[in-house]
Figure 1: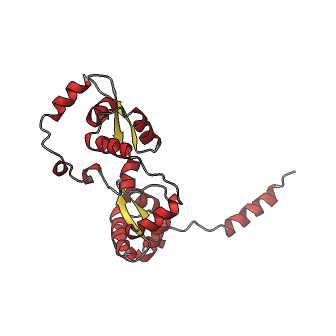
Figure 2: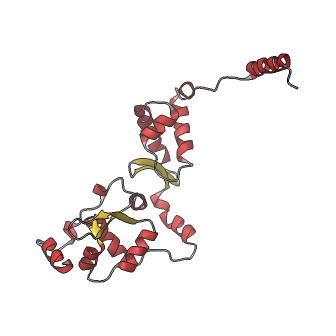
Figure 3: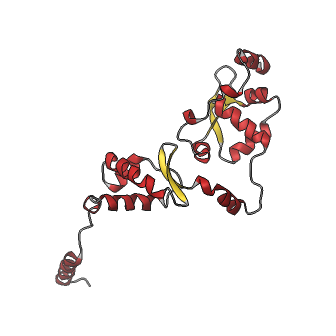
Length: 211
């Protein structure tokens, strides 16, 4: 049976021992504390985190987050990892100078690289996206159905609507593609024109091949 008097005393006791939750804003007024908090978050993320998300979680302004990130960058110059802005967000990555060691550890003697055919197909999609499978096949001169399935399975390519004229499924590269290549946006892809012969009228040729 409940006793109101005992419940009141117990409730009062709880109100005495309970303390208010600490304010992140007060704790993070120190730039060093803010930097540590950002590092802690970036250590556990699986994909790049935007400055806006960091600011929202930490309860500080975006300007303070940007300032802290810029201050952190040079501190990793001589470390085995580095901080990069990739695909619109920030994340820790192994240092490029240690790529050979990391690759050896990850592969552990197994060959998991994309085949030459897959790399060529991926390049076509990256520079021509959104693009249909038929158009990719026309450019490469071979059937790319199996290769496309591999790229989709690897998370590098995904469907992106349909082509109005033919109803064919269009494909584009994913955010994971940008992340793997260390790019912030597709506009960071290297220019392709200097590596190609004169291809004026390529679209007309491709249209004739895919009709």
